[in-house]
Length: 154
Image (cartoon, rainbow, N blue to C red; front, side, top):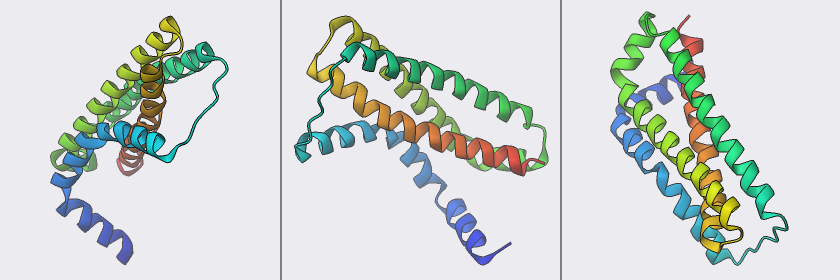
């Protein structure tokens, strides 16, 4: 094992409480993205709001299914020794990240439905766009954790 990998693993092991808090606070990515949008003066010209609502709703619903598949992968390796060691240390971190990701996807899905039904409404549209960025980051983090577990469980 290389020095860099050992250093990262040591850092990860020593900072698990920080990672748990970071996973819980990842929901704050949405207001941060929203703030960057508001204060940067960027403006988007969206010509077809219903298409945007449909695509964002489909994305969030599909990612909820993807999270369910990731849970199934973790369940398939639960009896392996390396996974049990990992679960003892990091299961709380993953459960927090997984739960927050699922909650964010639900918010995005129902926000998309609201945008589709109501049409252009500044608040709902900005919420959906900000949550899409948040969802992408959270689901990516969950994916990295699950893939790492599936690979190391052998």
